[in-house]
Every structure is written in structure tokens, then in C-alpha cells.
Amino acid sequence: MSLRNIKIEMLAWFEDRLGLSGITKFLREKKVPQHRHSIWYYTGSAILLFFCIQVITGFMLVFYYKPTLEEANASVGRIMTEVPLGWIIRSVHSWAASFMIALVFVHLISIWLTKSYRKPREMTWMSGIFLMAVSLAFGFTGYLLPWDDLSLSATKVGTDIPRSIPVVGVWVTKLLRGGEDVTGDTLTRFFGIHVCILPVFIFILLAFHVYFIQKQGISLPLRAEVNKEEVKSLPFWPNFIYREVVVWLVLVGIIFSVAIFLPPSLEKEADLMAPAPEGVKPEWYFLFLFQTLKIFPPKILFIHGDTIAVFLMILAGILFFFLPLIDNKPVATKGKVITLMAYVFILYAVVMTVWSLW
Amino acid sequence: MKLKHSLFTRRQFLNGLLGGWLGALLVSFLYPVAKFIFPPYREPEEVILPLSNFKDMKPNSVRNFSWGTKPGIIKKTDDGTLQAFIAVCTHLDCNVTYLPEQRKFFCACHDGWYDENGINISGPPPKPLRQLLVVIEKENLILRKEGVK
Amino acid sequence: MRRKISILLCACFFIFSFTNFGFCQQVVPEGKSEITQVNKSSEKIVSSPKDIKERTNIYVFVAWMWLAIFVLLYIFRQKIKEVDRLYHLEFFKSDRK
Image (cartoon, rainbow over all chains, first blue to last red; front, side):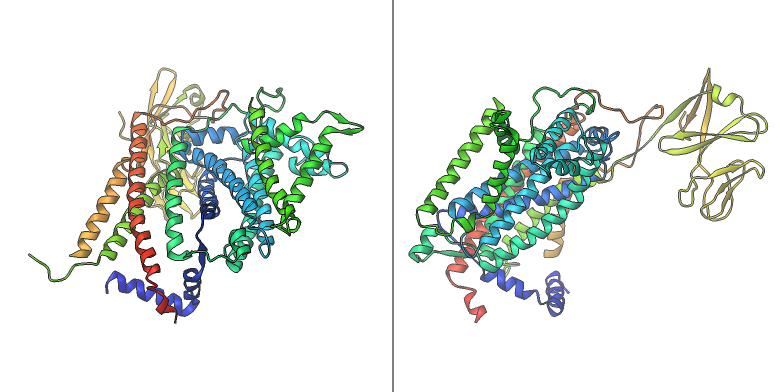
């Protein structure tokens, strides 16, 4: 009874009961178009890779992290100094978060520019926007957990922003903070959101997102579709998957090297009564929003500048969400304007981010 | 010796190489993960306590102390000497207590009994309680792991 | 014979990976100590390897990781060439009829 025979018999056992060969047949027949923009197809699975790294390192960190006001900072310190190789695990978790969100932005821009959200893929885009929101929420809630000076101040500012929305804003702030102010309750609440609530959301959204992609296939470039060009394609399994694994290997090498040679430090424990430290800022992916808020004057006519800024951000979010429905004529002038808007948005985000770091 | 047929095909060789190197890379990641998840257990070599806390003990009475993360019991015998035990039952790790009236250590989890010297006498405990060396140095009561000078 | 060689090679990979980090420690003597308390950090904690041994192990690990990645990239390149060739030959098409 050789190993190969054992493997064949095991697969046959599962096949009789689950009929998994349907899945492998589907994966073999699924085609991935090959053209000069195919490189962007790798961003989706790269995000998934980093998400898996976050889940695994998150599981490990949760063994030692204590989500209470008294112990949070010290427990992170303990992970970094006492637990064997804890500092690497924490560093990987911190860096993979940034890498994942960076890739989410790249993925979003690539879909926007290639207009892959056009019919019939509107819901894929919409589920993707929700996924992006959940990823940013992961970043926001995770940032508070070390409970140091900087993260406390950034959370105070971040949770205060919804307050500028009339009527409901105060309630949103209270919901996020677990009260009027940021306290130990906020920390525990953020921890619960970070490890229980958001993972549930992300798994559900991911299931929808991936299902839509499988159902509708990978989109073709607009020009190819319009001109009914013959586009070369590769089978997803095994040709495209092998290429994806190559990308994953390189990304894993990069993330571990960066995490080992540029690990984050831990600032001193937050003091709820102390004044805000200098240089308070959120994580890099919120900097452009942070700077936008800063440039708005305190009052425009009789309305608070903050309120207008938040409303504009919400409006932008809604427009983002409904982009496939707005851009329903991708080839026409409207479509070209929307493509230009993508470049304007990239420029705006980059300029604002750099400005906030000045 | 020349073989008539190859042992394996070029495809099998390549697949074997791929699986082997992937497996090796994964294992090299798993080892630090295992080290993280199973941190080394650190037990103290000795614990120093102020003698004044134990001077006024009556014979056949006990006081508690901490041996790292484990509870300890210091007992004063009838002739005035101090004995130190790690108050963890050798059966399944429950904390034991000393009953002065019966002059026995008792583990409530599974009805385990030890005599006044920590020797297991009844119930499931398989071994006596761990006893520590007691050394009195000036104003300090020093408790050391067995076998350490 | 083939199985023995493959088991030997696997064992070599395992030993190489394990010896990078020393063997699993069990009880590690702490030395003389009072009851330790959790220290509240009043200053910044910088991440770094504990000692020169850990630092060396980490450098070796990073070097090994990149070596393995480059070897795997080479093997995957061969695999990709193989499956692309099979696809262009339409090797699997008959299976689906």
C-alpha cells in the first residue's frame, strides 16, 4: 500500500460522499483573461493572503493580549519582551495590516480604472466597498489596542468625528466609545469589535464577493468587450494559481523581512488625564481624511466646517458605492469623466497624505 | 549499476522538489509559531521571604507564600522547625490545604490526603507533595528548590 | 529504497529548520527572584531580539527563508512552463469530452 495509493483511495472516499470533483472541474474550466492589464488580477488574492496572515497572527496575539485598561499596554509589552519571538508576531500583524489596506486601495483603483464594475458585476463592487469599510474598521479598532498615548489620542479624535453629524452623530460616538468619553470600556468594546464582530462581517462579505466573481467570471477590459476582441486566457487551475503562488511567496518574504528589520515600538501607557501628545495622527490610510478635516474652516456661513467635511465624506462614500450604477455608459463621455475622477482622487489622496506629514 | 527504467518521472521529481521545499519553508515558519504558543515555564530557583512574617507562627500552623505562579505552604512543626511545601496536589494539580486538627494536607478535588510531612497516604495522589529546602539566613527565610545547594 | 531516500531528505530539512533555533526548552531556571509583578511601562519599548543568539538565529532564518523562496520561484517557473505547454497542447481537452 504505497503513499500514492493511500492518497488515491482517500480522495475517492471523499469524492463518493461530497462530489468535490465538481469544484476541481469548475476551477480547471474557469478562465483568466491575459492582456496588458492582467497584472491587476493578482491584487485580490494578495489581499486574501495578508488577511490570512492577520488571522493567524491575530489568533496568536490574542493568547497573551489583555483587553483591559490596566493591562493592555503591559500585555503588549510582555508580548514584545517576554514571550519568545512575540515581537516578530506583533510586528508581522502590524505591517500586514498596512500592506493589506494598501492593496485594498490598489485593488479599488484598478477596478475603477478598468471599469470592471460594469454590468453584470455591480454587486461585486458594492460588496467590495463594504469589504474596504470593514478593513478600515479593522485598522481603526486595532490601532487603539496597544493603549498607548498616540493611539488613545487618535481614537479620541476619530470617534469624535461622527459627532458633527446632526441628530445621530452623538449616538454614533456614544456607540463607538461605550459612553461619552474614551475609557477602558472603549478599549474592551474595540477589542470585541476587532476580534468578534468585524471577522463575522468580513467572512460573510467575502463569501458574497468571491461567489459573485465565480458566478460571473473575471471581467474583460472594456476595449476588448466593446470591440469583441479575441482575448487569450489561461485556466485558473493550475496555470493562474501557480502564478498567484509565486506572487504570494514574494509577498511573504517581503512582509517577514520588513517586520523583522523594521518592527514597531510601543509608546508609554496612555494616561486619560494627560494632555494630547505632540504629533497626534491616525494611521497612514486615514491621513488624507485627517488633513481634509484640518483644512476646513471652523464655520462656513452658519454651519460647522466639520459637519460639512463629514457630510462630503459620507457623500463621497455613497457615490463610491453606487459608482457602477452612475457609470452605466462607460464608453461615453460620462465614463471618461469618471475615469478622470479616479486620477483626481489618487492625486488628492497622495497630496493630502504628504501634506499631513509635512 | 544501470537501471532499466527511471525511479520516477521528471514530473514526479519536480513535484517532489516543489512539495519538499514548500514543506520545509512551512515547517520553518511553524517552529517559531510553536515557540510563541508554548512559552517556557519559568520556575524560581529560590524565593526569599522576610523571617519576621513567620516568627510568630504557632506549632502545627501554616502560612501561604508564592512559588512563582504556584501556591506554597510554610508549616511550623511541633519542635519549631519550618517546613515548606508546594501546595499543589500531585494528582491533577488542584491546590491543597492543611487541616491542623487532623494534621494532614487535604485535596478537595478528588479526596486526596497527605500526612503532616506531605507524604501521600490516601486517595489518588501518586506522589508526596514537593518539599522545598528551608534555610534561615540572618533576617531572611530562603526557600530553595530541592537539590539546590 | 525510494521511500527511504525521501524520508531521509525530509528529515534533513526538518533538522536544518529546527537546529536554527536550538531545541525546545522546558523548565528554564529563573534565578534568584522575588515574586515578580507586571511592570507598567513608563517608557517606550523598542522591539528587538533578546540577545546575540536570537539575533543570529533571526538572520539565519531570514537568509534561509529567501533561499527557499528563490528555489521555489525557480521550481514554480518550471511548473508554470510545464502547465502552459500542456494547456497549449490542449492536453486536457480530451478529458472533458
